Length: 138
Image 1 (cartoon, rainbow, N blue to C red):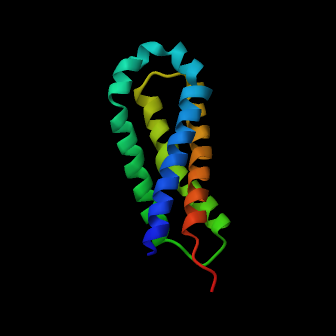
Image 2 (image 1 turned 90 degrees about the horizontal axis):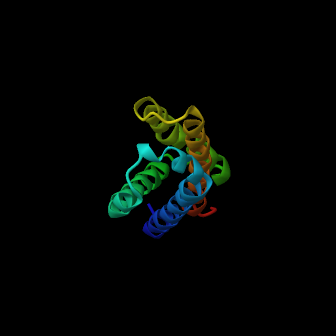
């Protein structure tokens, strides 16, 4: 395992994951959250707990990078990244947001937006990880 690539993938993956999360939840879905404001913590309460969200994102990315590296094959990094993104989508946003939909009384359209945007986010993150972790050509 190349430690430089591992650390680079973790840093880049965290930045991309956090950035796409901000884009999805603070910009694209902001009006949906405003319309369902009674379901969420206040903005101040969420900001106090932001460190927990950032820590969870960091833990997720570290795990994703290490899992990716364990399954790395000498094949196209793009194909492997897409495959890994699909697998990450199945275990993270798809399963997670389906469970959230059952527990939190959100409109089905918001749950669907969570799932679809989460799939896109996982594909982007996985491609970044795959691109950085790509083995050197022999």
